[in-house]
Length: 269
Length: 323
Image 1 (cartoon, each protein chain N blue to C red):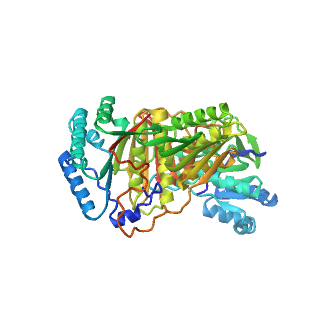
Image 2 (cartoon, rainbow over the protein chains, first blue to last red):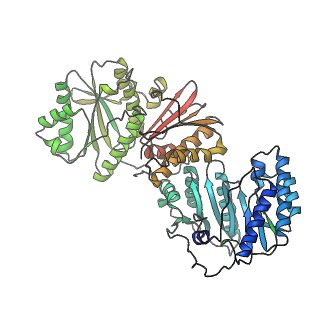
Image 3 (cartoon, rainbow over the protein chains, first blue to last red):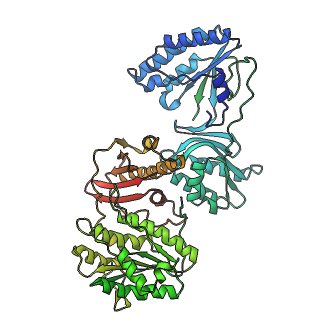
């Protein structure tokens, strides 16, 4: 999270944020019990509410029996959590990874939750996530390699196509690379070539580029591509808010939209 | 880390000649006019000569070689734990000579001499070196003369020299060599040697195109805590990623990576079951408009050594990367 610019150091130090490793051996009851005691302890400490998020897909991946067992494991976990948090001031965001959940699982989990948050991902394979962030703009997070490289290219093609058709569309196609951890050589060459093939009035702007990605781009001719703008990511650590002098709730700083209901998240492809 | 990104256009291109000598004196007799010519023209001079030969040459030129700051000694072959790799030597010389030529804006004269220590079991190193130089230096303003003994231990050395050099130095004059062959034809007939066999690897991983992330993670883990700077780790991971990508893209759907760690630095081998189409990949800067071929070119410049060879089982790449 620090890597992605989220200020977590102070909340971690103050005990407002805790990261617990997933243990595939723990039962749904174990998890529910841990959640119950954590929530009660937080309430006793004076916090008004608790937010919890997690990805229970490991139950499927860790192969507790068949994939169907995993689904029942997730359903059990869900039921147990629901029992715990229904009458407590807690919000749980359950994240399901579409790549590891068959359609029937998605339907089942959708039915089991009160709210569904569909994130506007254009593409998500667990390694690379492309998210639209405005007209002609996308956020590229994760790693680009041989397995997913064509996705960037097809996004750029469709973004440029829209930019050319709509009179008010911005002439800069922007990619926010601040969470891009790896870019392979062919991926870098692809970005350079894409920018070179843009019509003269259009530019490809790469924002928040990390030094590691910058070096690959430099070695692949980016400095010579006149329609490519590479903006390095600032080295400043994420801004830390001043320490709270009284408990104000365990809100995770990057929670996009606080909501009082339980939600499930589906990555839409 | 110096990285060349693109090919340059030069008026003078590679002139690659072979010279033969019957004795150390005969060798120096032939070196003197070549070195003197470069000095008189105020052109940069680079050498890959035995210390005794260089001393004799310097004596004959009245100290002009030893004192001249224009003389650059090309890096000798490193027969480290990964084994001597002629293609790696050619890639390094190309990097140095490119920098010299660009800095001085003049053609570079190179004088090199056979060293029996690198013969290996059959002298094939030299055939590979000259073929690799033909590819790596092709677009550079370089005049290189390679001297070989008239009677080397391995006949292969003479045959390779005769096939690889477009020019022959004969009685102080350069003549076209009718026996000259294209470097790829030479290497098809006499492929690059397999490097020395290493022991069982510390880690072995079979991967497909969808598991390149696992390859990168394994390399990163092997390097961590072994004195590699963060930037160096990232560069080595990039280099191995490119070789692994090639293996599953051009070789076979599944390929294998082996890692050796230790006090010599990281050694990594990528094996696939495919056919090596270009016997010397990544030796020449790719054209800016060419989307392919840049990965190995960059990997060669990031690693201490990168050796590609093929056999009946497929294509293999071994890299050696120190902190």
